[in-house]
Amino acid sequence: MKAIERKYPPAAPLVFHKWWGQGLWEKYGNALHEISKDIPDDVFVVGFQPPGGYTSPNSNPSYRFGYRDDYHLLARGGGHDSSNILPTWDDLDKFAADFPNPHEPGTFDGTKTAIENANKAGDKRYRLGHWWGVFHEKFWGIRGMENLMVDYHEHKEELKVLGRLMLDFHKGVVDRFAELKVDGIFTSDDLGHQTSSMMSPKTFHEFYYPLYKELCDHVHSYGMHFWLHSCGDNTPLMDDLISAGVDVFHPVQRFAMDERATALKYGDRISFLAGVDVQYLLPESTEEECRKGVREWIDMFYRPEGGLLLAAGNGILPDTPLENIRAMLEEVTIYGTEIYK
Image 1 (spheres, rainbow, N blue to C red):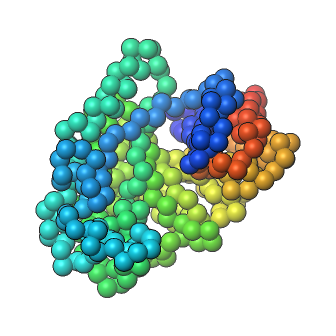
Image 2: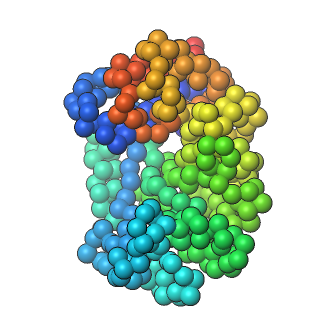
């Protein structure tokens, strides 16, 4: 809390620093536990059962974003765009009529149990309600990326209807987390690619800014913080994200964003869950280079009043040497504390 609100924390809190990417546990197994068991987790992260895409994850067939049962007949082969959840706007009314309910029974049972167990154990850590995918990720997941790029110009009103549906759903999810007294909400919306944002600032402001503003306002009405993960270059969108009310931004992706310029320009207006580079630094450097790179990363975002939390930039890849994972964990723990002394 002190770090987010710039109240002079004693250290940079650690969260999502033990982000084991796909294939990492299969490669290293229990060795990952052994090298990380003495490293603190400063935030208690808890999720819920989100809706499915094409199919429901529970016994209610409507707890999904899909609205039809013949998606297998639509596939043309290839990637996700080969079979869209909403392939035509002509079906928007059918899609909306079968939209999932955020108050679906049972989807927060595990959440409630985890929090009750934490309470019984006397766990006083910051509590973060978490799920992946909020607006843009849902839009392209439902319409397909190619269709979405056209929708920005030719189907604006339909896209705004979809945005309203998604906003109301996520406000309902926030309500349920608020009932369980979490301190913050963390979701994702990969808005950038390697060299810029996925849409122009003008397009973002028209379609996404109003959604973010209302959702952030809703989160803040409960006294909670809003955390956002967004991969890629988000530089063109940062002013709007801050204006909308994003409190914590992750990861400031190295080699996609200018991390030094970002820290200098925005560090007094937003807190950073600064994600250590998992594309190049962790997998390709020597152990000493890794340690040096992590310390330099911390130096870039450090402010004595706070505003810095530390994480991995994304899931740590299986080609990452075990000694580099340990080196990163040690540096974010030790140097992330020493720098505040």
